[in-house]
Image (cartoon, rainbow, N blue to C red; front, side, top):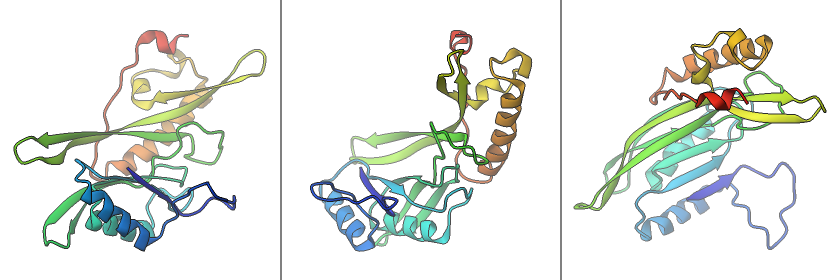
Length: 218
């Protein structure tokens, strides 16, 4: 695993703090060092992109292609606070081989107190890797995502409780059968519909989740 960020929101990073800022020369060198260790897979975590935009920007696209060309296999992104596409990208590596990598440009928010549009939805991305013990090669066998909704409950004492709920569980439930208010339910449905329709345009697919009944009744 390698990870990099565009910045620290102005926070200082005095030694011995170590923060890997996005620097293409350093990323390329790190990937060379990682490849020399002969790992099964190289996963790069990127803190990048424009906040509140549901599509990746040109810089994300260009850097993703470079990372996959230099040796990365999978890229998982964060920072925009909203979900961005999950895409397969094919590149030609220096040895002239063709490599297809997977990029989840932004997982959105998992748990947060943000109120902007679409910030109450996130993704869990699941990746299945398969290793051929004869050739010693590892490949991406399958991948999918689970949209999750951040639900905030306030108890009688005014304390907030945050739940991360798979959206698919509520697909067949009417608002009156859900433990959340009708307004929250409708907001979840509107947000998830927009994001789901957007993600369908790209390369991954959704996996539905059925929660144990007791988790939704407590």
